[in-house]
Image 1 (tube, one colour):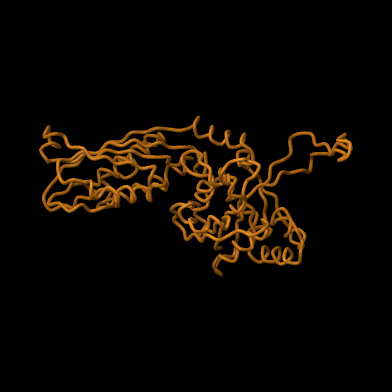
Image 2: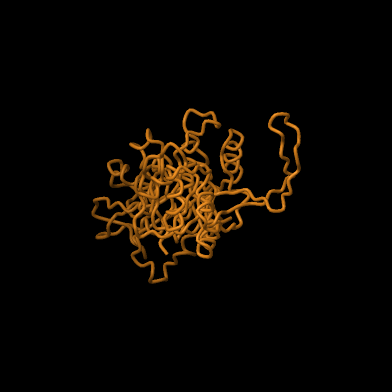
Length: 386
């Protein structure tokens, strides 16, 4: 099974009343769109991504989406949602046989939800996540605004996304839409095309951001639930070893010695991330007596740390670090270092800061015998599962 995900972000979000579309608003250090994309990018079953944007944002599309692990196409939306989905499907490779369609305005989809949808697709060919209606439902007379009847809620569900389809089922739904049938979602078209659609359990926190109150609630989720961690690392400097910081090799005659590549900057940030998630430290996850980590690039360990805390329900919001060494000067390399860290952390580069200091000739670091790094990382809720 090859799974492709289409993140529909082509709406203008007029009801939000903000200067930019709601999918480009910031929550917890990332845009709504970036949170939605990340949920599918980190899911192990998903191999391709397509983001559908308003045509006027297409030129800046890759920058708006941010870094992704998987191939990600960016295409323009259509006049209607179903037209935008058609454009998204057209951008998927022929290898994709299961398609997930997700509203970018739902930034809190998690791996468990995606798993349930995929299981429903495997069972029936199409699946919609939904939650039961809990409130009493009234139908009102449109002219008098008086109650016309009370509707039983026993069989009523509120649909969410991502909705999943075998590609053949989605193709049939799209073909029906091309005849002029209008629908509010792809599941509706699939139903009318005669295909069974399974309901799987949605998630109460898989909210859709529609109003300013929704936006405030989403931001509060991050403000109230963030975590801060600190990290520190130090290695001796010896002749003949490369000096590597965040995967960037700095020309110098000496470098740090260690079981891995002794990248103190990456290691310090790894410890800060694990500390914020209360998940131990670098030695617990990547012990220096394990041959598997001998010579391991620090940037690779950093990517693994991000994946580990994502599994615990956390994403990195930002990181700040200080490297302490006497020589050489790091200023000429700082741009590459920050961009490498941002890519590994899955954040924009303006969420990463690195400073270089000397120890003014004091102690082993000051004498050039060692290199050290301190780091702080901030995590926000929003990984695959809490």
